[in-house]
Length: 301
Ligand code: 3PG
Image (cartoon, rainbow, N blue to C red; front, side, top):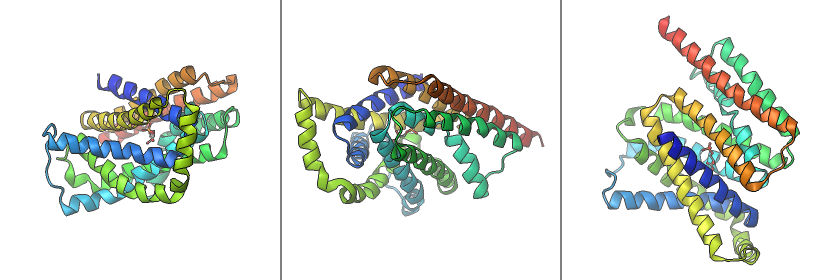
């Protein structure tokens, strides 16, 4: 059930996020607004006592600084990518996140992987490369955004594991709430600096381009609400399932989102592009199988 909710919320987020970016191509604004909606939502949950609130300790806030910074990097770069290429292409590239995880956790020495896991990332890399060279909407900025987003989220996961180890009593929903709030503090000044001067003109152009202007506000708000909801659901899921099941679930999520957004936005897809995407996604399944087998071996040893 939690998976169905997570996927549905993610599809809705991806559709409205792209609808706005098509008329208002300011990803820094949108990414910041989405974190702002999440922060407001948490204030509501805490003040209405729908969620337990306890004053965060200094140690907890300090421990959050790293994971929230990397969450910010992952989020803004994904949004920049969404603004430049088809949503499906961003998600194909984002499906290669496990390959980044293997690479960086090996380089940092936080994890070691058997050769079979390294082999399993080959199809991910090959599939993504084939998808990239045959992508109709290809744009270098869109590719880089998705790649940087992978790096950001992998570092977020590595540092969450490291620094938030002793705060396991904080539930997933509250933890994600605090990550949103700290990320908002990081992103707001950067967004104003990068894009702030263009927002008013962009807003006027967007309103002029939409036949019924209130639709613009509805889309922006829906993207913010569903951005928070899908992340909140995924953090809640992480409380209950293993990281491995989570990563398989996340890959399935991308398949569902790719198919839905290709249908909604009627993106043209070349056969070789579909093949590359399928190989990349199949590669992430191989990766999860290989790392599950590797973990089982470690336990037995
Ligand atoms: C974001 O903007 O943070 C991206 O949509 C993240 O994508 P993911 O949660 O599917 O990795």
